[in-house]
Amino acid sequence: MSQNTEEMQYGYYSQQQFQNMQNSSDKDTPYIYYKDKNDKIVQITEVTSNPNFQTRFNDIVYLGELKRFHCVSSSPINLHPENAAEP
Image (cartoon, rainbow, N blue to C red; front, side, top):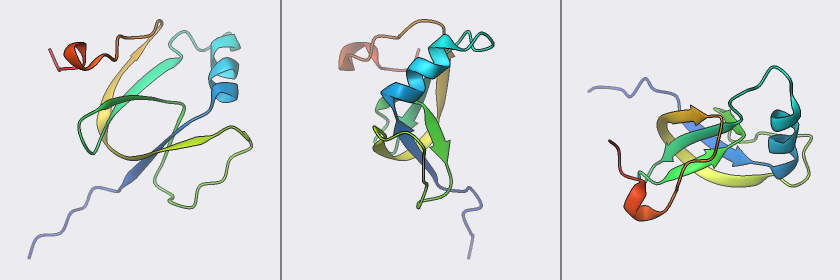
């Protein structure tokens, strides 16, 4: 029997955290994208393997299970379904 050795990852988004990332002088790529379990590209500000994750940001939104990293960018990418396919 084979075992899945990959650790489950969970995505979160906080507008407060995103603004902090944009204002950080050492962060020139604040837009971070992952694909969720349905292959939908989502913007995240936090990824964790802890399903009971606690944050200091009170506006955090749980985005669900993540499948894999997609990209980082210095500007937002177009997330419309017709433009969200992989190159």
